[in-house]
Length: 44
Image (cartoon, rainbow, N blue to C red; front, top):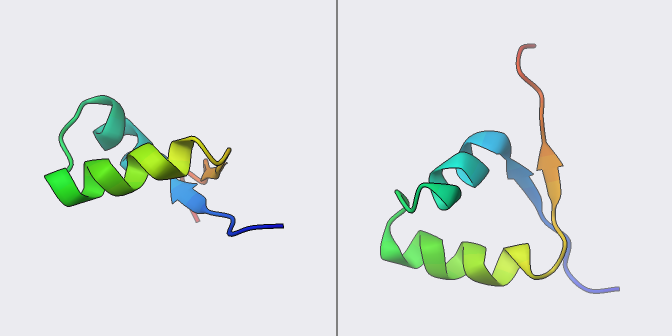
């Protein structure tokens, strides 16, 4: 099994709004194709 990612929900929102820097968008483009896990913790 390859590398797995845990992505914060805020990062997903920024990605969908295209508000990440170019390097972040490029990284996320690759990550979303690898079926990442998304963290949905709202409050600890």
